[in-house]
Image (cartoon, rainbow, N blue to C red; front, top):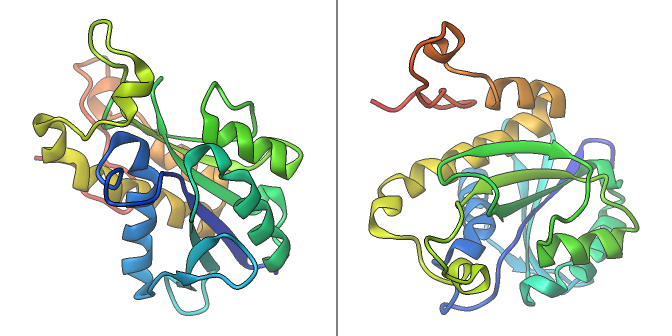
Length: 215
């Protein structure tokens, strides 16, 4: 479908993992479904739950999905949904946690490898390539010598939780921007430096698409 985008929020199933760093992609999926006023339901042809709708009347259709399985088996459900809705890889948006970005940072990327992320690894394999869009939600590196695998399966720290809701909203804004205006426009807005940083002053977080800057 020419106006349809498949948006996949990565994570693991169940209450045990719901609030962990590895599940921030599914947090964004929940935010998008709420904006669409849609409820997740079991898909008849894929091992996933989906919520469908349009952010604005006449706008692109978003199929927001969460796999029923674990992170490292994300590929099968994504491929099943892409085939069912007739969506090319370039119109698949995967929202995922990113260790290589500081917490409270967003980046949009199209194409590339998996960077060691097991969910992305399985999706690249299932789709036969990595030319889908990624909304990378920064969670930062683990402190000290903490193992990365243990770190991503822990809940966000109290100081992080203060900004987590805003970060999730901004990631949802980024998804809507990509679907409405394309990847390049979304990148220009989301990646734009702040005015003070561009002028050589101290860098402050830039207002992201569809949001106001923080006080």
